[in-house]
Length: 327
Image (cartoon, rainbow, N blue to C red):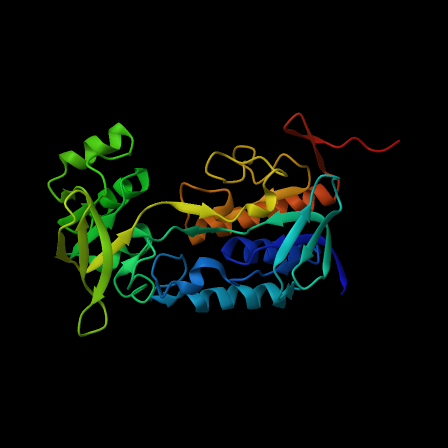
């Protein structure tokens, strides 16, 4: 058992956590990153990345995360192979966290970058065909299905938005929903029903994702929720769009969250209700959920953490004020 002290403790290690570490280290905050059970976050299970700025050719998600990690270490970040199981923010700075190793981490500031996970159906073939025709992000992967036949599974805002987005690349989009009406906002439904590129399939669930001879997705096995009848649908790509779950279990009852469990921050900032605690990336962003936006909020969190540590601002009634010089 050991105790690790730092000016900036970062929990989580995706684009947000690594970016916060890079900026924090360059500001002499000597950050510690506790990487968690999935170092690198969701990008470590993303193969081709074509929309991260600065790379003309397709890059691999795991490679990008390794480069971010190496850059953070190069400028002075300490990486810890541990998973935080307990956090105390109730008593203000310094903040205390405990890893499942039994080690204790104490930070003058705390940056939360624990991310979010896409919700999956949990049916056969889904995991095996991830990156081979099955995805949970049309914005990330839709480009690879230009002119091809695709399906979106879900019935809420996320599913309808994904289907509408995919019409930029495909003229044959099928929306598969287990009920006979959508849960999405009416304005989104209106846009979907006006599109001649989207065909809804009602009262259907996906029972299995089936590969072809090339090992990539070939078709979906469907079941009618009313009749029990089974059918197949040949598609090149399938996008599971049943929502995301932020990794905020550690902070329930300790930090304010919205109804979906995302951490609440002051508008336009990474600042939580607790002074000195900052949230960045998908753990507080349920709208964009992109690597580049996560990295941007990680930068913001580090800059604000450095200012907090330097005493340049304090939290008062939810607004930042210049700290008065101590008399």
